[in-house]
Length: 298
Image 1: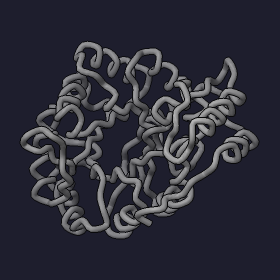
Image 2: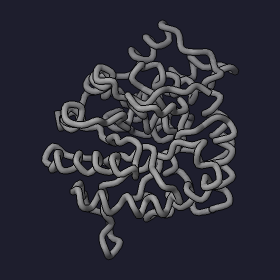
Image 3: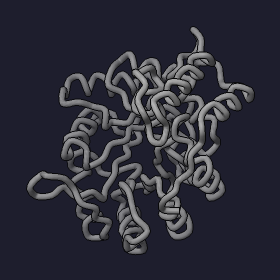
């Protein structure tokens, strides 16, 4: 496993992380999979209070209660479930964030959260108030560092100017190269790490039947799959090629993979044992699929 520093923090995150939203409701299966991941060198585990109405945090916390010092626990805040359970509403206010952290600490069975992330954000938020909440949580010892989970360039720029975020989680893959144009270089310029989600584009880059994805039609997705296949071999699967594409960007510290089986876990972790992408292969990948840009929230 390779480990990368998260921004200006002291956290050394595994290049292959575990996106815990993929966990189901079987506690024994979840615990076994999380322990296997840790045994294979994965130390970055990302969850959120939103997932499974908080049960996701409970699964993760219980699994790592007796090995807390060996893992980086990242969770998120900002989406408030409605009382009737019909959905959630955005709430970036200081009072809400500072109340939620205690619920997450309890569910995770820990005294501190390594990385607390704002689970979204808009340019119309009370950003100064939100930042103040995170800064106070750091001072109070409830969290070690904080970051964003956002794809909106205008929001990201504001936090880069006004806060001490160490990371930004964002969707990025061979099929979604929007961050290359607007965000990844800016993050690196400010010493902030990108944490990737969606690196396999909902499994489309790991072999699922082609379907339209974002602005790519079904044939474009199929063409991207064929290109990945042509650049792969017994030494490097298409999924590993896709993950290596993300990790090749110097702003990216970790790819949080959605993992639901031991086979997926092993394949993802072995990405770092596969032959790295050459400059020629990177060029082929970049030329082989249209790179869209963010049209909103510029």
